[in-house]
Image (cartoon, rainbow, N blue to C red; front, side):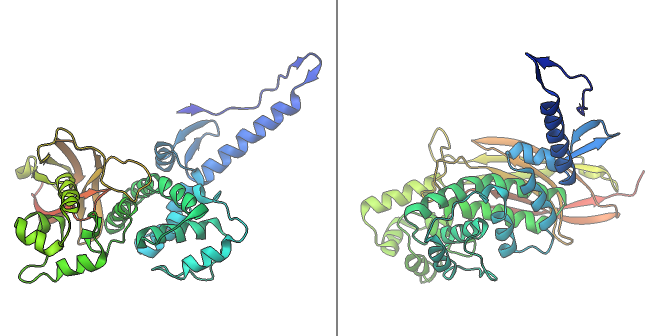
Length: 378
């Protein structure tokens, strides 16, 4: 809790120079800033004197993003938001307002827009937010961007993770399960430079869409994931991929780095769960490091700087799209995590889901159903 500043009626002169106007200006600046923060629901002002941060304010501060961005996320996101809308809201962040529009660049942006997955309604190519959207979609589609646009795309990507993680927190505060999972998937897309509908094998070095299709159409057994590829016999894999020894070595390095995590869980005091009370889910995570001593940075050549992987654990009720608990997890070799969630108010067995979501790779997320048995109150 912070005490609000008030105007001081006492003014002082230094060497005959009045500071009254400077103090008035400073007080007005503080007052306007506080009013803006309050209207954006980032702070709460009590009794016109005391200040405290709201949940939105804490999120904006933690991820170091503009209060106008967090306000836009809060007012624009809804349970009906889909991938296209999520992308538009991300690109509308104030952090992208300063993207330059250079002379002659509008035609380049217009051409870029025409080749993207999601269309734009009456796009204004001089709008930096439209440019941000186009550069993000080009990144997911792996279109080659050169020159100044490539520099701008790098800046867009470097801010995207912070903005998306803030989005996840805003969405979670509203308890929207499917939209939170979608925002987490977009984090994976940012890191790997691909769409969520693309073959997961495109994360692997030297893979093309044609090769991924050939793997999917492999006679006898479709190869669709990294784990499918790892489980193949060496000779069968070599015959399917038809790569050089050097390329196969790159594939092996990626597969050894790809997260292979064993997850177990249990509901504590499962025999004594009563309506409306909190329950605790204990999750144990253990990674197979494939002989390595540490995890190391994510294998993501399309992301502009080294990145450490991160995870979310989520408990949700998929029957009513309700997110019940969420926690960020940083995992090296082994971790135990407790998730506290509110149990349903109805007596009886209730089916819930636990999700383990990565922010860096596609195809390594885990999802399990579990049941809580809500007893009659004693």
